[in-house]
Image 1: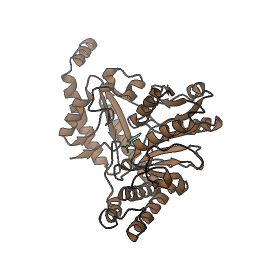
Image 2: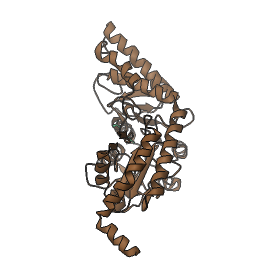
Image 3: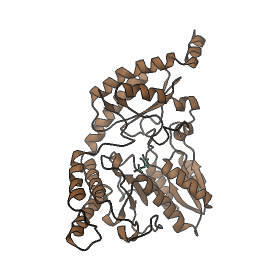
Length: 391
Ligand SMILES: *Cc1c(COP(=O)(O)O)cnc(C)c1O
């Protein structure tokens, strides 16, 4: 059996999304900036996609800007705000468990003379509102805190953060890449200024995303050139990608409740099955304030990488840490922020679910995983020592 459990790394493109994209790859190849009919057709398609995405945020179409994905949206929001507000202040607040697209951008700005506070998280991965309030300064210009974490699925108190930002007249950006398509984000009720999202995490194509930019929010451009995206993001538009993104966003929000219910049931079944049947195992992240599709567990006495290879041999695709950190041997900064030891951080397994997964697949994983864990532990000298001690 083949079971894909790495939906937080990326998702397959839905057939309906691909169908919507095809004409813009095959027939309507005009440049949307051109005045002839080839271009006009594309302009219309882009307007439709912008409406579709705007609707998912309860926003106006002119508040949606298409980008080259979640990383670009994060970079644009943070660097653009920093550049626009640097005469007002140079202090930025973020968290220690952000995606690298936020973290490395902030580190880059530190080299340019900005000061960044990286809020710590508790052992469940949640920032403290008190810490946030304490870190505010007269020169704070931006708060950037992710909506939900891509590794451990923890959801931050975004409403409270947004309220504090608003009260103190500080811009608030949230990386909502992992929440988009799982929760409704209503920009009429949530006072957030900028939101980053990405198409390929919601059954759309890779290399396209959006930045929601609340009307009146002034940030500098990241990409300079032609006048596309109302002069805010240069470059000939990725029409097919944008059309696919619009379709994927619309479809995800049509079935939000049913989708989340399906995922939550599977997640709980998987989580319980692992924690109840495999000893010396820890759940990473908050039990309830958690994405409906995320299971992240650490197994004592095991290397995550060897577990991934063993799972792959029986057809199960999972990840350890995040896709960006696996491949390197550094343990995940997110797991270390929770206070995990290097050993436990290395022994982590992330299983992220999607709408193609079934109960049978989860049962298959629950049948395959325990013997793999046992076999790897039997090879571990530390495990032997632990057993000796217990005797
Ligand atoms: C995947 C991801 C990104 C990056 O999005 P890309 O479209 O792959 O650039 C940013 N933030 C989070 C939380 C993500 O999960």
